[in-house]
Length: 115
Image (tube, rainbow, N blue to C red; front, side, top):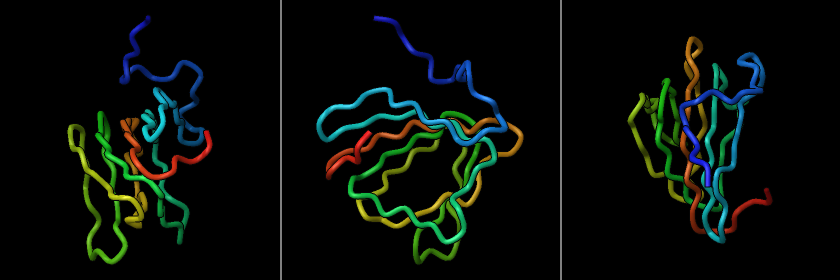
């Protein structure tokens, strides 16, 4: 077994390219991903409405999340974590432009999408 460092940049990732997603672990009812964003945001009008819950931990960088019906964007900085229940509509308003934003996302329960 070889350990993985979640803060090490992906060796083949171009920072100007699209968001990078590594599936670290997948089991029935559980999926853990490392997501690396660099200035990405959800496309205009797109709201995530996922069939499973998602617990997120921001390992580095910063991001703004918007929840459907909320007046303000939720600011996340390194070390912040948040549990998003299944079918809680949300979107990424922005991620840091000047540094990678590294997320650890734990998806649980519900029907996991095909990998």
